[in-house]
Amino acid sequence: MTDEQREQRAREGRGKAGGVAVGRFSGGAIATGDGSRAEDRSERVGQGAERGTGPVAVPLSVPEDGGVAVGEMTGGAVATGPDAEAVDSSRQLLSASPELLAAVRLLRQQLPLLARAEGDGLDGCDGQLAELEEEVVRTGRAERGRLVRLRALLTGGATTAGGLASAIAVVQAISGLLG
Image (cartoon, rainbow, N blue to C red; front, side):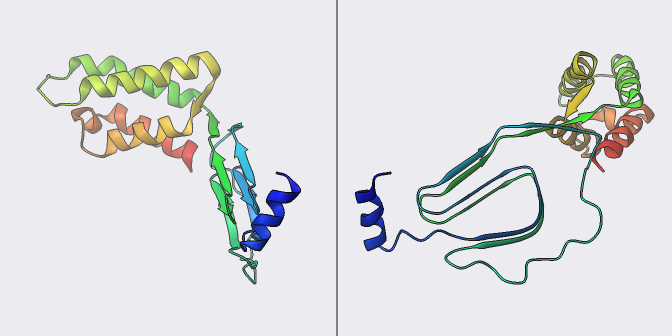
C-alpha cells in the first residue's frame, strides 16, 4: 500500500487497526488492521484433542477499534478492522491408534453380512471406512474432519451399520482420539 493510499484511508476513518487479545490460541490465523490479511494452511499432527493445561483467563477488556477478545481458541480464524481477512485452511491430523484400525477393518468385514435395502447407507458407510483405512495405513494418521463425519454417520441413524458392535468399537476409538 502506498503512502497516498494510507493517507486516503486515514481521511476516510479507515486507517485504524483493530486490536486482539488472546488468552490461548493454538492454530489458526489472526488479521487486524488496515488492509491486513493472515492465513494458516498448516497440518497439525497430534494425539487428539490437545488443549492447554490449566484455566485460561478471559481477557479483561476488548481492544478498541473493533477488537476481539478470546479466552481460548483451538483452530479457527479471527479478522478485525477494515479489509482484514483471516483464513484458516489448516487440517488437524490425529495419530491413529491400532485399535481404531482394527475396529475399522472388522466393521468393513461385517458390512457384507448385513441384508441390503434401499437407503440403508451401507455403501456410503463402507466408502467412508475404506477411505479412513487407506489414510491410516498410508500415513498412520487420520484427518479430524473425516473422523467427525464418520462418527456422526455411525451414531446418527443414517445407516443400519450403526447398530453393530463393531461400529460401536469404531465410534469409541474415534471418540478417544477426538476427546
